[in-house]
Length: 194
Length: 194
DNA sequence: TAGATATGATTGAATGTTCATTCGGTTTTC
DNA sequence: GAAAACCGAATGAACATTCAATCATATCTA
Image (cartoon, rainbow over the protein chains, first blue to last red):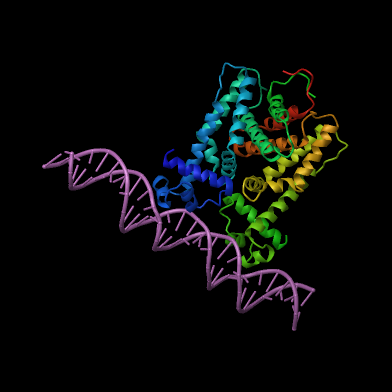
């Protein structure tokens, strides 16, 4: 791993454990085994470090989402794979989840960023557009809405896994259920409306 | 409004606009029209201020959630009221949403807090337990899971409203849809499994 | 090939700023 | 006239950032 990545990974770990505060440059330096000054060789400022880290992680997330995807598959299968990929990513590497949630709710993330070439939202929009076009998803709901909702639910289910996982001896069946619940919500609905 | 609340509200506003960082005590003092020293008359430290603010907001949220609830109503109606209440709260007062998301993903929020007498989760658990017992919700899924999932989706839908609300000329119908999608996911499912 | 020179990488102590917190004194309340 | 509330300048710690000096590596020169 090159030094730039080392620095970003150290920052990520620090943010996971101590929050967006709690990561002074001195500690980033120590945890990535470089001198404080070196960080400024790679990043203009702490803010820029955070921003680059964000873009670095978005790329990682998009990569994970795509893994094993194939647009020839039935959409339900694609959906379940996507779900599983995301959940695995977030559960295995808490830090990404932690960083993103803090980032999105901080002033680093501006309304403008949400709009302009956001790889991640583009990818999700395309994915759900496929599902709508294939006739397997509800029509009449914009893909943007589906994607934000589904992603939000994945994040929630990650929280369930993490916080309650051990104590409630929650079995795999129960957790697998969540994807089913969401699928039942977004799939093409049968005629009779309750 | 008493001074203690004034201080908490000023902190809340500052965190909404400038994040968990960006709210120095000097500015809290200015925005609440109080001297810096006075803050320490009401709160032991900045950390304690944040913690008290959290509990203050949890109480507000529980309060909003309950508004107009009545356990004699059909559960779908109760669910829709709950949904609407939450969404209204979060959309009208962005700061609560912003604060909570930052708080939950910061070191202030410990795993332990999640467990011990959390008014909010208690309330939600009871609410969804009612739904399961009434036979109107899926059985076989723990209320804890339902509640975290539903709440996560509400938060997502708030994000949709806020970020895309204006640009996409998203009509009420579309937004109302989200609650329907979620309801279709959690309600008792018809026999045929797709 | 040995050395000379340049370019880039790295260091960590020093700097100046920002900020939480304190405290001696003042005002308000009862 | 005591107790509580309040003030805001002063204090000291923590921190981001800088910079003069050192080291590493590549490129050139005779």
